[in-house]
Amino acid sequence: MVLQNILRRHFLLHKSRKLLSVGADEEILAENINGKLIVTLNRPKTLNALNINMVRKLYPILKLVKVLSTGSSDERCMLLWDLFSMFRTVIIASTPLAPCGPRGSSSVLQSFKQCNSDPNVPFIFVKGAGGKAFCAGSDVVALSRSAQANDPSNTVHKDFFREQYVMNYLIGILKVPYIAVMDGITMGGVSRLLHNWYRIFINLKGCGLSLHGKYRIATERTILAMPETAIGLFPDVGGTFFLSRLPYSLGQFMALTGYRVIGADVYHMGLATHFVPSEKLKNLEDELLRTDNNLLSAERINHILNKYHMKENEIPKFGLEKRLAQIDHIFSGSTIESIFKKLRNNGDDFGKKQFDILSTKSPTSLKVTFRQLQIGLKMQFHEVFTMEYRLSQRFMKSHDFHEGCRAILIDKDQKPEWKPTSIEEITDEMMDKYFAPLQENEELILKKFEA
Image (cartoon, rainbow, N blue to C red; front, side):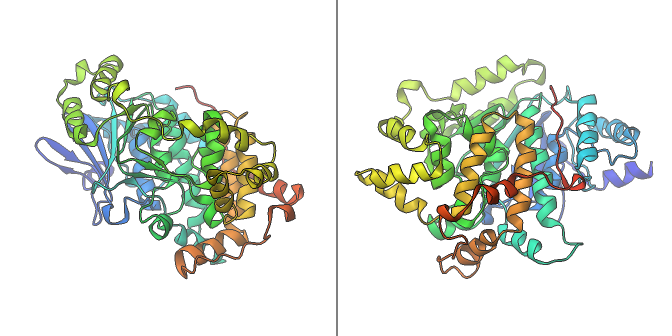
């Protein structure tokens, strides 16, 4: 009863709505509307950029109240599940995430396996507040400061990546239909970076919240990019998996250059399952909410989404269509050096522009990203997060990540001094250290789970 009373204090119940995430900031709004779960990223002033508190609120939602086992007892998980089930909805646990090392992640997935779907929740609908962005990523300056603090008690730079990757994996294996509306900015990895360069920014954290889901809705306002190599990072949150599988070497092109994919091009590339005009999003959401839960089968959800999906002959043409062969020829190279060589020998403006862009990126990030996608093509979904976590922790100790944050986000002189200064200086042995396993108690190991 004590635990039940504690839990109740975290919920604000309305007559027709249940606002499940409650706090001073209310950065995550989770509402039960007619038995449907609507999740809103609610930091519009920061373009809904993720922070670790948001991740810790989102994870239990997406985990469908399969509260994390701390390793002490699975009975605790089931006890909390029994208490939560009386709300007939998905609710947010107030406890932080348990560690997800080799043992922790196994307990998480085992708990999830025991009770994967809530029959009272027909789908999860995720959107961003403010009308400008779906999600504009994480505060990488905070990650940089945490990594440089040399304080064993400051583990933000470890916890954020670990907890987010587990959440991203969970999105990819959910049985409950997951609908992500990528209306506006949906980008990769580095909050505030595009404010400086493009005036707008989308973070791969936004991609991690959307591109692993079953249904991914793009609009004419969608802007999607992975600009991590510009600050000495790499495209993460499962980018290894979906980027490496794009046709015409488009994933390599996006990951290395930070190319922005806009509007219908997100659909044409296969990153979105539907293209819906932004003016119709409210009607789409309303129809999903109006439909009786008992009628919301997978087929019915498909029917509603397809109803608002623009007719194929009316969708704007693929902006990169005329460049596909050229992109594939250049970015399908066997090494990053060969890509530079092809661009250097390419006489047109497009090739010259890409060469100039790559020349500004961190050489270490470029080489790591290229190898990352090569390896990722042969990996299973759960395996990529182990590799990405290793990379994330190696980058937290690298010169280029902190220098990129300094030059682009802190001092804003836009003149990072990369070390090494060229890709030719980076040896295979140096690369091997980035991909090598961490100490056993530091690893993130996710077991393959068939939903």
